[in-house]
Structures are given as C-alpha cells and as structure tokens.
Image (cartoon, rainbow, N blue to C red; front, side, top):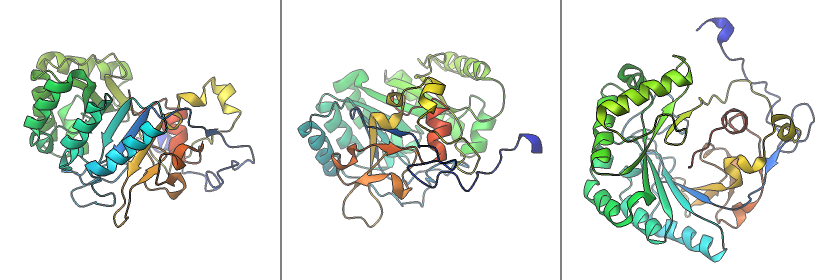
Length: 317
C-alpha cells in the first residue's frame, strides 16, 4: 500500500455532538421502527485472537461476561409482553459456543417459534456441543442458522488474520455442519485488497463446490463480505439531508430494527446497546430494558457511516 492510498486520520471535530455535525448541520438519527432482531453478546472470551477484532475478543478479554439463559429469557418475555415484532435472535461474541448456556438459550429461542443465528468460528468450542447441536437441528431444522467466519478462501490470508492452522480447523467444522444438514451461512472480509468482490465470490464458490458446502457464494446473505471498520479513518458524517442525497431510508439500517444485549464485567444486570458494532461506547448504551432502548439512535460514530449507511452492511438476515 502506498502512502497515497493510506486513509486520512479522522478529523477530531467530527462525531462529537449527537445533535449536529462538525459543520453545524443536523445529524441523522434512526428511530426504532420495530424490534425484529435481538442480538445477544454471549461474552467477549474467544478461543483465538484475531489481528483485527472490532470487539477485541481473545482468550483473556472478559470485558463482556457470559450472559445466562435466565437473563435472556427475561428479555424474550419482555419483548412478548410489549408486543414487539421479534422474529430472530442472533448470538455473537467472542465465540458464542464458549458460553455453556448457549444450547439452553438456543432451545428457549427456537421453542418460542423464533429463528436463531449463531456467529461462530466453527472450531473446537462448537464441536464440544456437537450432540446438543444435532438435537437442535433435529427438533427445529432450518430455523437455526450457523454463520461461520471464514475471512478469505485463501488459507494463507485467512490464517494471517486468525492464526496459523485456523483455516483448516474452521473448514473441518464447516464440513461437519454441511454433512449433518445444518443451515449454513459464511462471513468473509472485503478488506484484503486482493481482487474485486466478484473474484472473491468466485474463489469462495470454488472452495464450497470442492468441499460440498451448500452455500451460494453469489448470495450476499448466504456469503456476507463485510467492509473493514477503522474508527480512526476520516469518513463523512451523516446528516438528515443524506437520506435524500443517498436515496437511502433510515429504516434500512440495523438500528431501526435491532438491539443487542450485553453484560459488562462487574454489572449486576445486563444492558441494551444500539447495535453489535458499538458495545463499548457509552453513548450507545440505551438502558437495562428493551422499553428503555426503544428510543432513536443518533448516527454519531464513524462505523455508522462506513459500515451501515455507506457500506450497506447488516448483521442479520
């Protein structure tokens, strides 16, 4: 990468005021139109340490501790009592399968008629729950989706991000899921700078075909290629005028239909944050209940611009 292509540092005057931009223009915000996806951060502990992890997950980071099955059940009960149009529960981490309550949480979610999505690296922690997963697959079928993180179809590039040997271990888990008929999605990274998206998808397609993995690499949901997140790079602030300029509706953003439950180390109770991307920023912590968290979210962070508004990314299906 040449110096000319390095991102400019973020203007320190930007993203300071939730109401107005650095230029004094009204900042865009997103109302909650209806809670359809509730994300659950099962804890930031992970079995590996990636080079670029937005949530800094690792075998030692327990800034977000394990959420328990009873704590999740209370939120599901609240959503039902409030008449929220909830359809999907997403589980993220860290590595969700390190949380021993995950199978019980999945059974609770699926037993209520909801869909469940688990983001996993498909390594040993997942395989430790193989029997429980097979029972859930037998009982609930395709309402359970496993989205496996495979950063690149090239093992060298994947391992450069996730550690030596991680590509092979993830493929072992992915192939096991495919052979046992699980509904599978894959998540990759678009920021390697190696070829265009079409070439990336072609590489994944060849890999999936060779291994018998039933994922359509041309489908942007079945294979999600996420943009990189760099909170220190200079990006435009999103004003109320941007909706018309970009021909984009605020309803299309994650925070219009989703929230995430986290439990901070030392906290007596879980809390609700605006989205999966900003678990540590206090301005995006919305309260301890779903009712409190139903207020609008000001797009006062670089990730709001690069990942959601301009990048067009979304974490759920």
